[in-house]
Length: 347
Image 1 (spheres, helix red, strand yellow):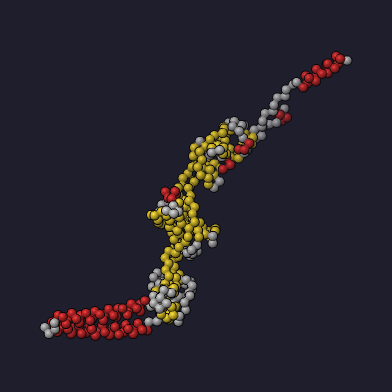
Image 2 (cartoon, rainbow, N blue to C red):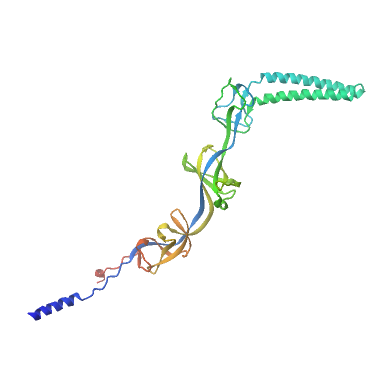
C-alpha cells in the first residue's frame, strides 16, 4: 500500500515538474510608409479692420439753404460731379456788381495809360488806376469763390452714403451732406507683434476672411509697414491692399488675416507617426520587419503633418499607424503582408 502511494506521488511530481516553453509574442500588425516631403510655411494670424481706399465727408462750408441734392442713396458719383447746391442768388448779384466795377476800372486804366504815353498823365495817377483795377478784379474773384463754395462736388469717384439732408433745409457750417467712399479696393489695417516683425515685408501676400463671407477668402499684398512701434502694445501697424471689384468688402468690416511668411519643402510624417516623450520626439523606423525607436527633430505642424528637421532620411520606412503597441526592437507585420502559415496547415 505504501509503495503504491509513493509511486503515485512520484508520477504526479514528475508530471508537474515539466516546464512548458513560453509562446513567442506575435508580431504586431502596423502600417508603414516611406518618409516623403511636403510644403510647409510659417504663418502669422491677426485681426484687421477694413478701410476705404479713399473716403471723405462732404460738409456745408457756410450756413445756408440747400437748393438741390444731386445723388441717390448709395449711388455712384464721378469725380467732379455736383453733390449738392446751396442758395447763391446773393453771391451771383455781388459777382455781377464786381464784374461791372472791374470792367469800368479796366477801361479807365486804358485811358490813363494812353494819356501817360502822350505825357498828359503822371506815373502816380497810373499807379492809382492800376490799383483800382486790381481791386475790382479781386472783388470779382472773391464772389466767384463764394459761389464755388456753395456748389459741393465729389473730389473723387465713389459711392455715397445714405442721404440725411433734403432740399430746402437750412444747414449750418460743418453739417455733413454726404460721405463719398472709394471701395474699388480696401485698405486692411492690422497689428503684428514686435517679435514677428522680421517675418513680414512689403509686397508679401496675405489671405483674409470675413464673417460675412466665411467661404470666400480675399487675397492681397502688404503695402506699408508703420516705421514706428507702439510702445504700449509693442506691436507695429501694417496696411495691406485687397482688390474689391464687386464691393463685397465694406469699410469697417472685421477680417481675420493670415500672412504666409516663409515657405519651404521639408521631410514630413503624419502626426500619428510621431510620439512624444517629455520634450523629445521619436518615430519607429522599420528595418528587416523589426522597428527601431529613433529620435527626431521636429518643426511646425500643418495640415495633419509634422515637419521633420533631422534624425531620419527621406525614403526610410516609418510606422504611421499602430505605434502605441510597439517597443524598440519589436517584430512587426506590415499591412498587406501575407499571414504566416499556421502549424496545422504546415503539418
